[in-house]
Length: 155
Image (cartoon, rainbow, N blue to C red; front, side, top):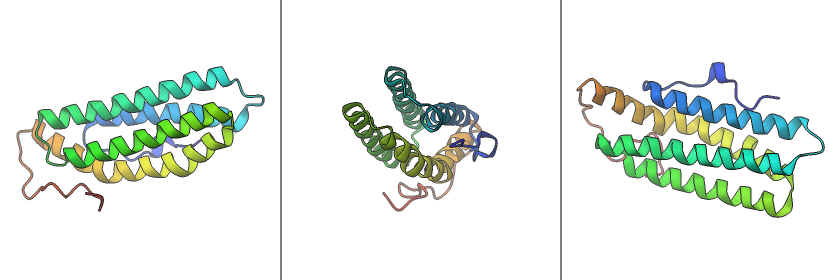
């Protein structure tokens, strides 16, 4: 079972963000497929893949936030707080797995927590961010974009 169908992944109007998203989803697929199809589990291999996934996610978030800072994107604080929340959960889940070696924790996380979150995040905050960045690159302004139009009710 594939976690993400990369060909059906929602794209945003800023190509650099799409590339980072697709890389991350492909890493998630690799880990999830391994968890679904491998017995016994090579915990050292899995820990390295989780580290790679965590670092990629951290760098993905940092990349978006840096561009948002450079362009004075008004929803930066919404994005930063959401990114920090998601990274904290991810780190805790990965620590829980490393303490227990229970791969079900990871399966549940990827399928029930990360998958719905990233899909929703791309459709909401990342689409708003990408629209802003695309308009910024073109020298256009986005009338009416305020600090609280990030596509969620979390601000």
